[in-house]
Length: 203
View 1 (cartoon, rainbow, N blue to C red):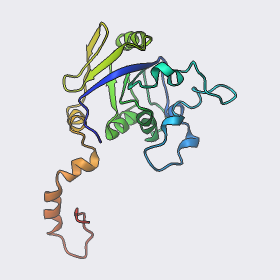
View 2 (cartoon, rainbow, N blue to C red):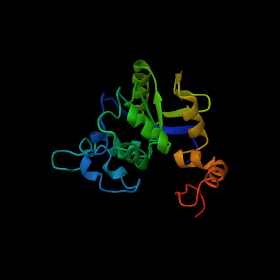
View 3 (cartoon, rainbow, N blue to C red):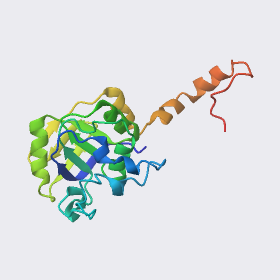
């Protein structure tokens, strides 16, 4: 995954609490096994009217927010089932970070695994960012190194687990973290009898 340093660009505001994973990416679109191709189905039921046509008023359909890189939403974002497809859909649409007062734990971990940055800020701070996002000319800057969020007259700090931060700043997913110990793994495997399965890195 790509390293995260500074994320800068437009915000899209979705002032809803308890946005669950079935609303983020409905179950009928979970047939793909790749991580790509889910973006067009993001918030599918909310983004369409009763006839199935795109609702021009919904935030991800509005032309002025098509290049938004940060989604700002309400508490308990990503609740519901543990589907990994939810952060995949958000990332595939173009979001690089989600700001909310709280996240469901499994959704939070799934975001970390793919390099989608979840930022936790207090309710009042999130409400202010949603106000600022109403003007699409306003941009937000998230600096992971300094753990700060800034937009217009707003600035706040956020907390993040030190190991998660290290992984995101250096672009290390679980595979890359394991590969950092390739020599030690190969050395250990060399001591095992030949009839046992090996976990070496040779192709």
